[in-house]
Length: 349
Image (cartoon, rainbow, N blue to C red; front, side, top):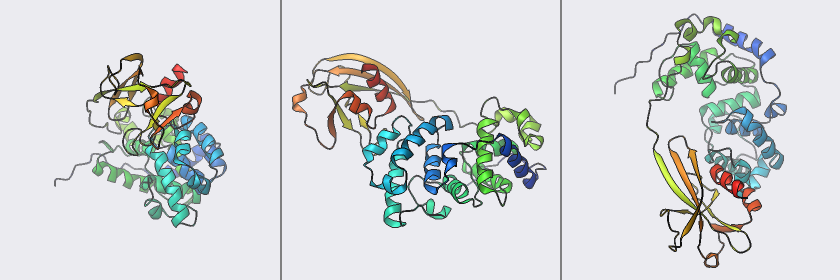
C-alpha cells in the first residue's frame, strides 16, 4: 500500500514555550466557571466530554445541569430507565451517546466497583469512549498528563504546525497526534487541556479566527504561510443524499397520540417517534390522510424531508405494548423524542 504523503514541516516551535504561553493566556482569558469545572469528579467530567462531542458548550450547559440534577452520580444513572435518560437527552442529537452513557454506567457498577476506571486504556474499553475522550477524562478528572485531539485541538495543531490534509485520514491523524504530544506539557494537565480547547473554540475558530489575539500566533506556521483559512484540510466533498419520509399523527378520542419506539440502532435509535409509513397518500389501512406539516432535517450524512399527516386509522385496533404507547401531548414532549418530531408536536400542541 502506498503511504500518503503528509505536507507540513515543524517550524521553530518550542514546546515548552507553546504550553507556557497558552497557560498564561488561559489563566486570564480561559473559561473557569463551566458547570463541570465546579466539581471535577470523573463522573461529571466524563458526562461533559460525551455531551461536548459534536456539540457546542453553549448548548451543552443546560443539558448538563438538568442531567446531573436528575442523575448526580454513576449509580443513579445505572439504575435509571433508558427512556428517562433519552428524554433528558432529547434535542441534543447523536443519541447513541446517551445509550452508551447508560451502558457504561451499568458496566461500571457491575464490573468496576461503581466507579469509572482511572486509566485511559481501561476507559477506552467502555462504550462511546475513544482515545481523545479517555485522555481528556484522565487529564481533567485526575490532573494526569494525557494528550487530547478533539475537533478544536486538531484545528489548533493543524494550523500551528501547518499540517495540510483532512484530519479524518489516518496518515494526517498520526501526524496531528505527534504534534499534539510534542506540545503537551508534563504538568498542569487539567489546565492545559482546558486551555487548548478554549483556544480552539474562542480564538482559533473555524471561521474568522482571531489570530491577532492568539497567544501562540508568533510561531504559527499557517499564519506565516497565509494558510490559516485553508487549514485544517476539508473533508472530500460529497453530495448529501436527499431522503423523504411520512409520519402519521394518530389520535384517540381522549386526545392521546400514538408513539412507536424506534429500533435500538440506526436513525433515532431507541427514541419514541410517530409511526412512519412508506406510502405518503394512505396509512397502513389505506385510509385517507390529511397533510399537516412538512419539515427538513439535516443529518451529518443526508438530508431528510419529513411530511406529517393526520391518519384516519381506527385507534381501537392498536394496543399498547413494549413498542407502542398512547400519550398525551405533554407526556410525549416529556419523553425521548427526535428533535424534528418534538418540533412538530410543539407546533401542533
